[in-house]
Length: 437
Image (tube, rainbow, N blue to C red; front, side):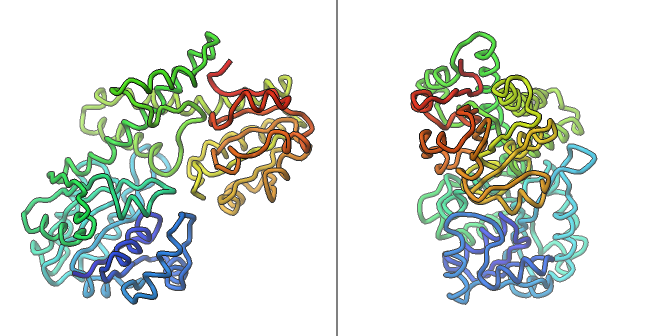
């Protein structure tokens, strides 16, 4: 069985590389010539731990190639994975299906034999049925081309493990043949005992957005509790730890702080709510609007804490912003809370100096108005306030004495509850965090 991967962004490149390492012949396809050239030369165009080494291994094996030709893809592949992005529309909360539709309509006219097209992109429920109709209409092989849905559950920073050793797989299919093809396409993964849930197409489409909505709800729940703690003087960190002992609740994603960002959770919950409204069941997920609102408020409240530590005025003050990526072990700045906070402080007149271990180039492109440092100590030099915005281990492990020796004032806002307050206070720092007295 030979596989093609249409779209070589974060999801597609990871999927193509890992499948080739697991023994399949894989062709990665993209309309972006520069991206294809980088991958073909052994360069991963984004930051993901472990992936560059696997790309080198896959290319050296001869099992992985890249192309811009959909005709070549159709002739090569037995199973075609659609892995293109579904960003939020510019003028709406709906998902932009431009790239998914383009991938299908570019591939379909070249499909002349029985084959399986598999969607992995996160899409509004009902998309698969529409795409199946497009395939049957445009492909010379007609109804011999089948569509399945196999949602992805990648966590940035852990994408290799999540691809090669996932905690579950979902196969949305309409025939036994499609299920057989998918099982063959993932044989090395399933051989590890990974559970498989076989569903219809609509259920498979819903699984990813339902999972992300649940995670977003849990994150925003504890941040809502942080708002209560701030009003009462309680400690949300201790509250979260107490709740985590309840096995019905658990501690995962129950960490208070600056909130979620990135290219998935924010746009997925908005698109889910939008689609539910289109279907006439918007009330069922109306709570997602408040989840989004709570998440946005955490950014504004973090700015407030910095302003408070500056005595009520940040204009002319130097602020060291530690972090730019939306999460550690990533260079992804899409909807990044860290850069949102940094940009807000800049607009208020602060001199904001940013440092991030991986996301500096991406941050510079989007926010050239900010100043960028070469390391954390460089960012903190002569700072009036330090604000930790992305919980990289490098920042967790930094010595309060060392950074205190270069800062103008020893004041810190821990936007991620990543530090030990007692250690920083013992070193003479004024320590503030969301939801903590």
